[in-house]
Length: 185
Picture 1: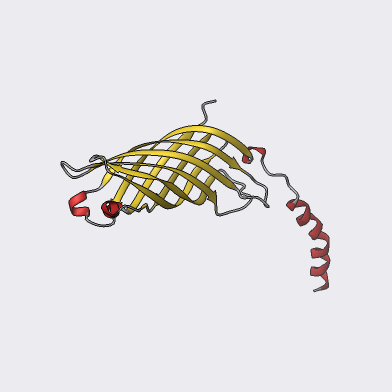
Picture 2 (picture 1 turned 135 degrees about the vertical axis):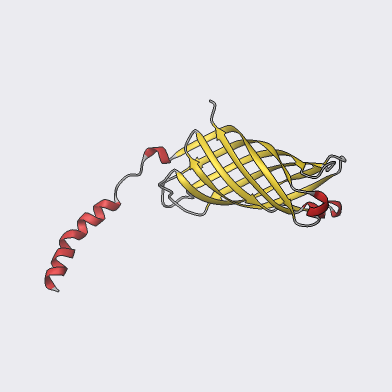
């Protein structure tokens, strides 16, 4: 037992020195205005037989993004805007337009990797149908940055839009999205 304590006592400074290692500088960044594209699918909670599955492209812009490997700060924060144009899989079905602004943050502090970073957030925005009716929507979001770096972002996310208009109650449901954003300047 005494031998073990001596080894531990001598090795402890080596473990402590390992904790003082500086993280990779590429893990810390701030970036503004990263345009992107994506694909969305929307599964209505009610009346899917009559409404169908909605899917289509979306345009997004990351207004602000920050990554930090500092263990005392949020590891990732993103503010973005998004517009989705979704068509119904039912013949003669309506088109939906979703738009919103999101604030997204990581579950972790001091992220020291570029891959598979989970996040959560909230989107506030609107929804409109091809019949020109509009409503307000808010969506809790959960997602994962498959790859994140200063100038490039690939993500997947799921959200559940809640719509405040009675006529749009049937348009609450699960929305799945995948997207890519690139810094162009």
